[in-house]
Length: 118
Image (cartoon, rainbow, N blue to C red; front, side):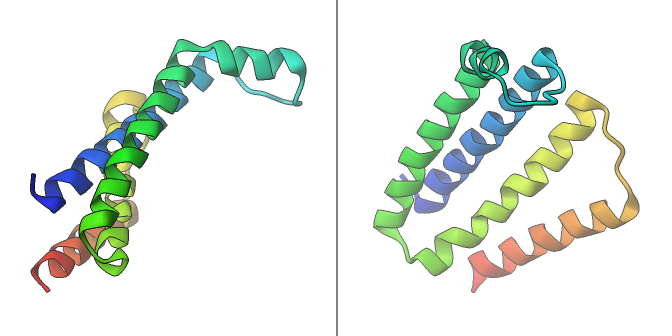
């Protein structure tokens, strides 16, 4: 399998993990103090568990990518998680997108394209 595809799969799992964590924590509600009850609620949330599994899978793909390519090539792809989360936040959580945030996402994508071609 192509190294870039492996990296992208890892990035998708990492982004999915964040999204699942957000859903889980939205279900739990704001945590105003760290208590045993809130900690247990987080640990038992199926969304949080799913997000943690996604992060574990992301790590596996990340390690495979690191075994195949230089860290200086692989690491900048992490920036794609910001773009994916940005898009998902708009569609799933109805968060607002300002022009500056959109511009920043486009800069990140441009940087990744330059990185891959370089």
